[in-house]
Image (tube, rainbow, N blue to C red; front, side):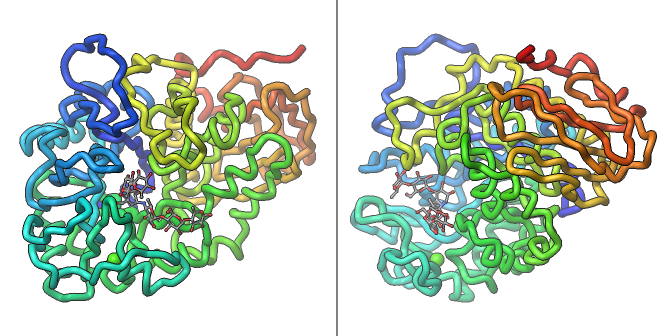
Length: 481
Ligand code: ABC
Ligand code: CA
């Protein structure tokens, strides 16, 4: 599948090791997470939880890298995240067999869901002494850049040729400028996609490989790819889009946090992202994956706000603007991270999911609703119209996208009711229904909208709103009156 198919979808990201074990849930003694161990999640485990994922309306699942990793226990723990590659032609036995991975692919396809696999081509991984002979297929130092760690992330040549990691776990950097290396990687990805029937790839460390490498790689993959570039600058991010296609939208990630940060956040942070001169930095904003959480950062409730009303507003933005919604497992379980973790600890968002009991929480139903709204409106103009702001102030943003109008607030559940006067851009007399509460408004030249308890409002024209399945509509929010 290509970009056009992926744009209509929404992605649920799991860490394979942490999401689900297969078989009956047996109570276990608390795992000691300090050694960063493999916790036992598998591809079979994911298969058993597809009802849970699909029940939220997701139609694509992103899993951890699948290749065999180094087995050692290092200073930074084990390779449970899958990014420490050793043998690119074998699968990681901790996650299952090649047959299990194929079974996951088949199980997804039987539900019309897509499989997205994380791939790493920038580096392999090692313990302190690098032994090149153990790598498959790049078993000689001549396939790598000389060992030199990246000390300055603003030095682009060093970012491309230097090594990630440190003396304890160096990540030997592949010489992707060497045509033999490049062509071997192209052949590798072609075979990987075909042998597991993969529908899309998440590409690790895109900015660590020269741009020119990527078009050949994406072509060889033959499926839509979304690249990871941990970089908040939209100009830099946008400059890679012609080479990769899809990108994880880190340029939105940081403004979103600032907008929703309790006290002091401004909604101009996000409506600015909808202005033409901002969009021009990107070839196609509909190929940006929009997210509030990832496995590399602490959870949104930890660094931004744990007020559910605020989380709901941020999620509405994720689903109902132009990018492809991307949700990291556990968001719907209100995961915040272990209390003893500091804000820069990348382990804090990697809890095991089975502790949650996979409950059908309010947020679970809310995500299902967002997915449904997006799907229902897609052909009614949502897919072809870009989002535009019709009102912005410090605390409120109202955004129109095709048939949809949403009002977002960053004030939180403790805030008093707020009245806004909007020029909605819908024709006078249009009846819009808030799918969260069922309340309707009739559009006038200036329409009054009342926001209660910091909750988002998501309006659709009456005919579309009535198609939103009522049983997934969460109970109305608590009011302060
Ligand atoms: C382990 C430990 C860490 C320890 C580290 C040395 O070793 O867990 O606690 O600090 C995998 C694992 C990690 C593991 C690493 C290294 O491997 O998941 O747990 O860390 O062994 C991708 C993946 C990530 C994966 C790898 C490696 C790469 O998403 O899960 O990590 O395969 C850089 C890369 C980025 C990479 C990230 C981890 O490191 O560019 O691709 N992610 C600046 C730089 C970024 C840099 C970032 C963090 O710092 O510009 O390039 O990311 O070091 C914004 C700015 C950004 C700035 C951020 C922090 O602030 O705009 O530029 O990012 O405002
Ligand atoms: Ca590199």
